[in-house]
Length: 65
Image (cartoon, rainbow, N blue to C red; front, side):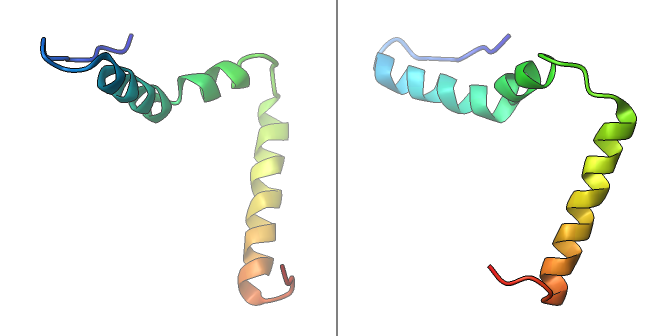
């Protein structure tokens, strides 16, 4: 649960802005989307390896954007 400390004289817009920033930093939405469907650990690991290979090839200059 996210708790926002707001002062009595603080505007509601500022409080909402603080809430939105805390919500994004907590990555609640990312976790919810990740839990919508089960991904096997082997598939997850394979994706990480492919991403690392791609980043390494970008750094070495094999690909041009």
